[in-house]
Image (cartoon, rainbow, N blue to C red; front, side, top):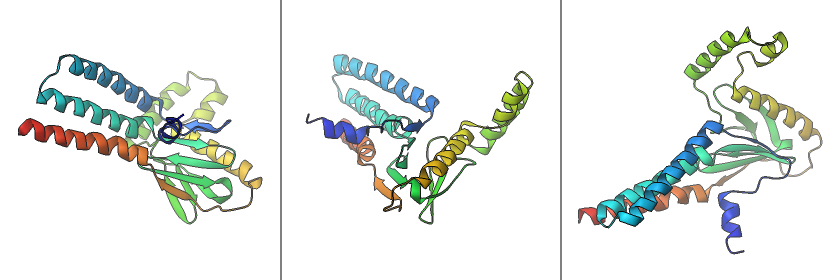
Length: 210
């Protein structure tokens, strides 16, 4: 029971029926690093007995912190009451009644309270977008016309924006009255996931040098 608050903070429970948008590729590489780091940490614990091993262990832990913050944590959660942007070090929650508009392009943007909030997940560079559109044009001739027309030049970011717009239109009409200002909070678990191993790494380096 004592671990429940910590677990909820590190991985907040997704409301039932919520739609989650995240990068499958980022999650794959994030978990791949976790497995790699775990194997190396086990080896260091088993055979390491010097300062260099201590430094290597803290590097592995720091890498796990980076993998969590950059690859595993970022996501967009859209549920019945609000949409939440889980970015690197901050969370943004906007109730549907406060969403002014959702726009795309190089990322997913939510406008609320006269401000524009950018989601870290599902970003795409102009070069990658151009590459994707070129590949889509080559694939169009292999697909039925109605399918090709629907997906023509559209990235995962575009599909997410379209779905979020539909959800905003549908749910803002039935949204409960109350505060609609966006709520921005620091993600302390993410900050801790980097700060603690970074401090351990600096300490290990000092120990190794002196």
